[in-house]
Length: 200
Picture 1 (cartoon, one colour):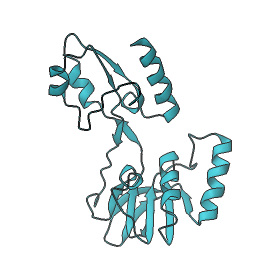
Picture 2: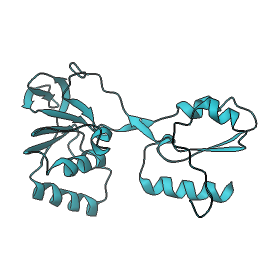
Picture 3: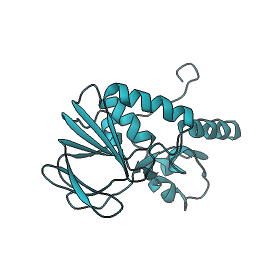
């Protein structure tokens, strides 16, 4: 970017700044934010989000429970396995990693096993206590899983605040790419960014 003379401004892009900048086009790649989960005890200090953990903004303790057996949950488990004595993942469906290819499922399963992480399916989070997570099976039978850290990896939703704000601004062409369109894989964001850059 330095060689091409791209100007980089290290601060949040606000609607006011964009309006004042006399831009003809804006490419919005604001990503996704954690999907909300409303269960008793969700505000407990032991609870944090997977993105916070992966960004290094939240730490985990010896016994970590990760809620969500998709790609984000699996990658979070692998990222913290060397720091925790016990890592457990729970997935509410009967099949974890359902959004991955068979090859990816095999590789991730082998890595989880190697790192000593436990994957439990058919359990959903229904509450949080001072001792850990309260989970239930499909029949409503509850059990408490002791943990010191509880990481939510239940999915993302698009961060569309800036996009919605730009909707009423005249004279600016707005392009949306990446997870702000819909949470997907990085390959989708790369392809969308490439296509938009060629168009603009």
